[in-house]
Length: 438
Image (cartoon, rainbow, N blue to C red):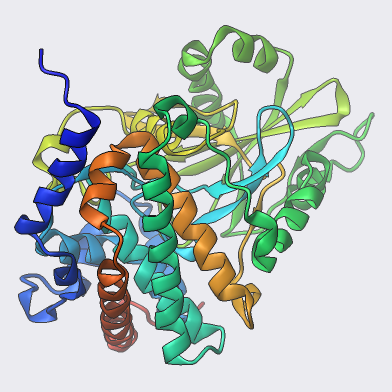
């Protein structure tokens, strides 16, 4: 077996520049599309709850950024026809400014990291960066920044990514795997998200999602009814959801199995989440442990195949998609939810994780003023860490080099794709898919 040396890996990355030059990453031609965005969106709705499809379209029609969040299928098709140097890593798959956030690590400390992996898959590293670039331009426009500032923000993000990748290329591999990002407090939006996470305790979630059952001794609680966003589940459907916890518990590590065994389920609800996930089956299970002041909420979230899978032949398999998401998350995150796992229900595949346990997210209004660029640098550094942990930082650093050509190209692409997203959004609003809100 031939073991490639560090120099050989770096040279391999440099050689990929002949395949696709770094400046070529600015390219985007909407005329290369062979299928309209509306048809791609329609295809992505297959298998979703029919009654919620119109709601998803309505949510996407609210703003260009909301459209972008729900249109991963469109961007996947657009990215797939672009030239690529073929350097692979684990992708977040839906890298945008609102898919990073704060949450509680297994040891209870609050961390900030990429936190949405529904689309995760092994693919060309630049796909994550181009989606992040477009999201930064759209977020910059939505939060009142000048166009020049939005593009400069993308450059700062990608330059930080490249600089951090060069650092990783010189570090021991074990140190890369456990590298902690320390620049969080430099970005006000990150500080705000961590502050939100501090307040998002299980007790807070209990008050938000449940209510006391009137007239019952001991004041037991049940899920609130807030249709269509939150609906209590009973009868056969409730039994099916609870039965799915059996396969889930078996795949957990023994210490997690023991911890879960100390909690008893109290109720089940169907919850509408996010924008991209609207229409997928998403259940919440409310548990009680050491009395009513010890709530635990697990989310059982349907996971179809990654939207990128049709464009990555090596990814086509019968692999469990809940497992795909959990393993992709662990590959990119430094610390992950201790209850992360997967299960199945009625032929459908699900991810299982904690719901709202000290979670705090970024809102677009948080990015007004000077926070956008500092936040963009954090995004670049976290993506670099995720790609370095799951790919080869020496190959990536070799390809990126020390210049700023790649960052400038990504900034140009981000602006072009944001322009196209706004046109696609307008097309959706003109279509009959949105209709009048009920």
